Image (cartoon, rainbow over all chains, first blue to last red; front, side, top):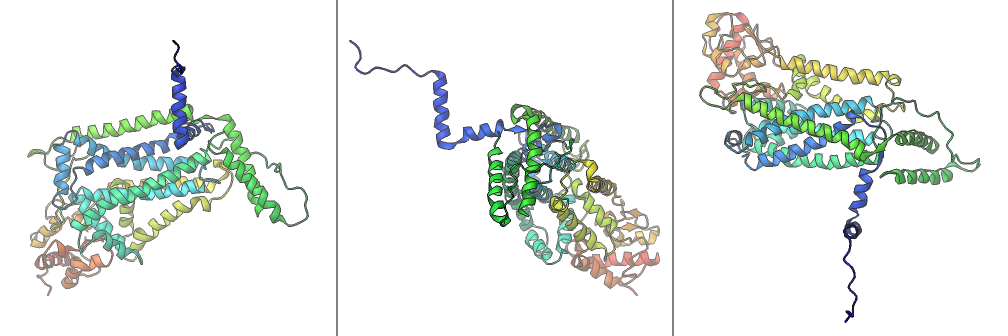
Length: 273
Length: 275
């Protein structure tokens, strides 16, 4: 006797994948986002264009090793040096985590300079990428701040007295200098307050700023696209195709819709064509 | 104005559109380069950590803290706020600023090293795209920018190398060629505080950031009270970068140091506290 309700055939694997993607797509839009990111067209790039992504990788590495170190590190004058010795000598692979964090910092600074040099000599900071350069230089300054605050956390002689000199010099800056020095020190001399302030700056405040800046920086890179080596002269100045037809009335009402059209075309090109 | 903006936009989009046509999809073409280089960088960092740890060796009686491996020691000596017994040196990427302190070491010049040049560098860095607004990206069409772009790293590297090779402390209390001065208790304190990592003494020491003490102090001469105040806290308050040594030494010890600096002026032992 036939079943009263026909049982549909089981979905094929392909159908299941499509259904899953549709589920995710409708709820999050991520598949389209990822596709647009991955398959966007970029001008000819080379090995020099890899420095930015290398910096992102090293930053993630620093954040990861830093989080691991923070699990053991003790930000106090009595505990800092001993906890670092414990990490290096006793903890399983602690030396590797600390070593990668220590040397990753130097590698990051070198990569920053190379990345900046690449951008400079390619002229990639020029129109319309001014804001990409600006956010990048803020990241650069923040990373130098990471170097300054991280140095003291080891709490050895060299770093301690170097930080004394650095804070003293900071205090000589006009207007804000003395206040910043007072804020960094947290007391008359470098001590328990200073180390916890440097620690908070080093693992919360500055990295938070860097993460936010990285998002803006990368959004701009994806939106505007990378810059190829400037080998060819720009096109001879063409008469714009949609040059407003001779209209004798004021410029502004004509210019506004044209600008809007240009904006719209720009928006359409973003995300890959 | 609006017309100019539109023309620039159209020209740029025409050029960039043509360049995009020659290109590829980001994945897998550009991403391939990224993956290769990123893996290489991670490998380099791991290798540096391994070589650093393997060559520096463990810390024990025969290998005290500060024993150098290929990439430096695992640890230096623990910080002791009571006694400055070290060379205050920054990380290598701040050595150019450190060297600037050594170049501009006269008190009135100090502001160049501490404020003016670093601020100028940062402002130039951030504002550069708004200063160099020429449209042509080719190197041949922007010689001034390229010259600046080559000169800046050259100067930074030169300053860094000079800062890295700054002479360190003198070992022991042999700060003077006069044994009678070296025998003073203050000479041992000067050695303990590693004054020679920043100041020149008759037998050596660093040529900065601090002023030369090879012939004593030009500012205070044999004025031991003035010297003691300066060393104790005045130098620190005057924004020279010099630490306040009244945190590390008691008043008697600071007076003994002042006696030695005053004695260096005349190259003969001055009585403690001055005549």
